[in-house]
Length: 435
Image: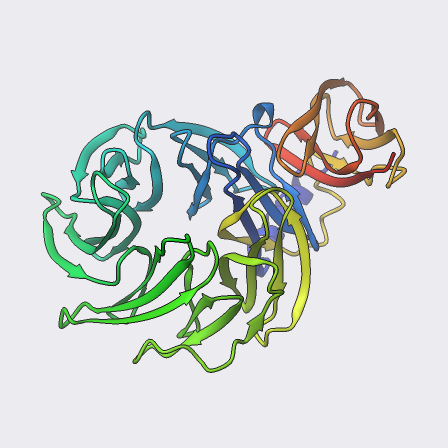
């Protein structure tokens, strides 16, 4: 056992140690409408891992991801649930579920005291008390609300469709959220406004509407919040079934047009002549994100799992690809702050998960793991579609290494994810079954 003096020195060392930041990306796959195969993935150590949920079910139609402090909010549109995950330790743990029956939630934004959730079936914005998740107000809108953006004491919301039809709306509302939630201003933008990006008193808007063949026609708008002026550039580009992800990093605006990623002139809203990234014409760019100089592109060819996430550096060089669930549609990036110390060998993790073997395997695989103290380990195996194909609970009473054997006699060949959870800590390993 460590002496009191040594423990005190250890605390001082950890307290004064320099902090280093890393980023953990999350990818939300929409899945297929009317099917509970939405899936959440995390990226670390050059691997994409499926985040496990009870019974292997996250929800129906994964819509959006938002990180606030150390919590990840996962909005599932058609199952009317928001899953809240705690990210404050290694991995993630499921904290609670917010059920919004018959609301059809889309996006969420926060102030210090309230959470604002755009809901199609209201239609309007549901306001929750952040202390207890209880509704405190509803801001009804004359159209289906989509993306939300909080700037100072104003909430901006895009109205993507008309109130009682699928016809495209063309409004962005500015709502005073200090007291009475009144609409201050209404801006007319390109039809089908979705994503909102704020920069230097300007809101950029990405819009999508569809022609009679369901080809996506995209447009950009720019709202000058000081003058109230709106500039619209209707690009009239068909992009397959592409959304309107609009991203801003280091004062540069990026947009997906057809199968390429283009920079956008923030003055004229004109795209660059050449794309900085061009993907295979057989794939649709379903989503786009950028963080710390790295692009993340969600790609699909048939909206059926497995789909793909491609990574590129800031110069457009390909960094790698990963298989994920159906229709990767949204991203969130969690900044991890760690201390670097020489005491890693003194402070043990809750448990360790070693590489399963053999891998690939024919029918039986061994999963080695070790707990630091007596506890219950949940061992699950998921398909890339997010379906749980095996789950067991193991009582462990020793800190020695354990080996759990899984016989995959009743599942087909493919790539699977081993998920081992102990209390609030979860680790994942990828395995390949070849029969």
